[in-house]
Length: 140
Image 1 (cartoon, rainbow, N blue to C red):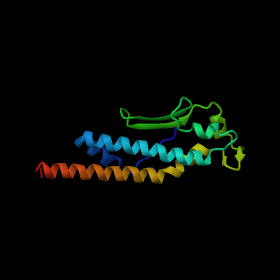
Image 2 (image 1 turned 30 degrees about the vertical axis):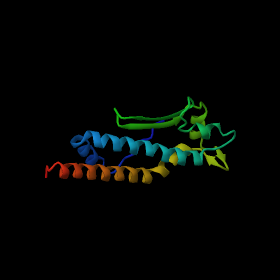
Image 3 (image 1 turned 90 degrees about the horizontal axis):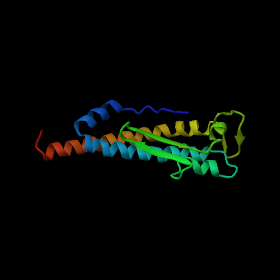
Image 4 (image 1 turned 45 degrees about the vertical axis):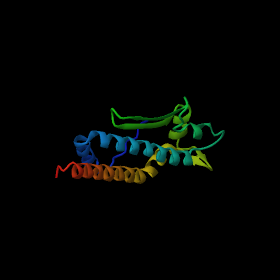
């Protein structure tokens, strides 16, 4: 299952990325990593628990989890390799006091506002750094 998130202000970020790729790349990578932590926190909060294995596997750095940033594609991936995770996610009759079906999708949706803030903040940092570089370099 793949869930895409639309980031507001992405066109401006791409423009800045082309103008100053080194500055932009660093901030973009940081925003992507922080986004994964936000999603990880929100998904784990909603994950049904029996033994705790599924909850701990979400975004875990060990073999059972997926937590990676691909700067070549400007994307980030978070997930789990626990085989039964898909069935817990998609079977709508799953109910548990600490979570429910659609825990992953719901956790991602809950994260969107914070993720947009992270990217907007990154964009502001990039623009400030470009402005300082331009000002200090007298390219005004």
